[in-house]
Length: 307
Image (tube, rainbow, N blue to C red; front, side, top):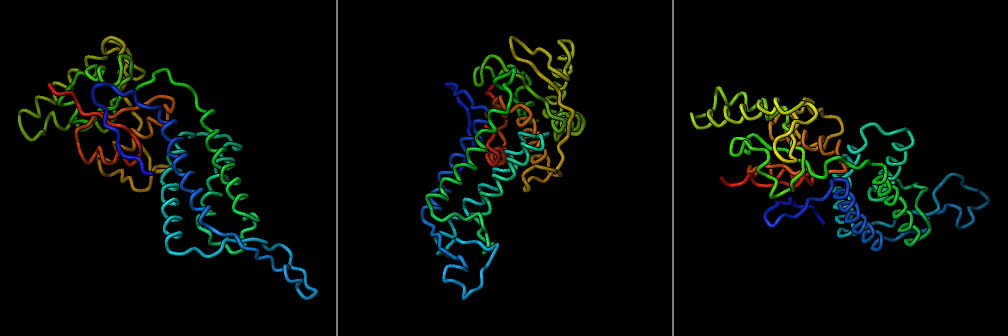
């Protein structure tokens, strides 16, 4: 199972908290992992199994994986790819883990990777049977599932991030209430504020420059409604905060290139969602390339409302 992007339309479908989305993705990986194990074979490779001619071998594995055929090899690689795509996003939920939490999560993830790689012919963790292997994998998956309980609830069930084009098309941040709910926090990312400033002066035509100036005036007007660093009132129970933190490469999915504006936006949105794992963050964008990249990190998106 692979996650595709979620586009929200009327009637409104409540978005799922991101932590729950990652747990659902883990469950899908676990199901396909179990299918890989059920097609695998474990053999007795104990060097002492034939008596050893008076020599006793110590420290060697007693059981190991039988060779995989092409189909099983492909299935192992497929699950490994998905696990390695999921793991960094999971770790982002815990930017400051205790030593015990970090060790627990790393041990579980490395175990799952190792039994897919099967590169060590002396892996003493391989059990005597496939049922025992299935139980061990379920234990590692359960460890990762249990991490959900470590994450706090969020003050806002829903959060919104808008890209630059969405802001030009609809500068009213409260316009998304019919889609994502009456109460939410809208976040304006640094990359958007920077692009907006550029478009005010160097937009490709008068229409774009005027739209950028209009959006800029609207955002600056929010300062009269409260502290935009923590949340200023927009309208009703819709709030807005201006973000100042820029993404760093460490811990992010490896394919994100922070020198590319779209990737920088996706990285910022992913980090913001990870900081608020108990909420469901939705990105407003009509950009197809942006939507594709958001789908790759399991962030839902919504088209700006037509005016």
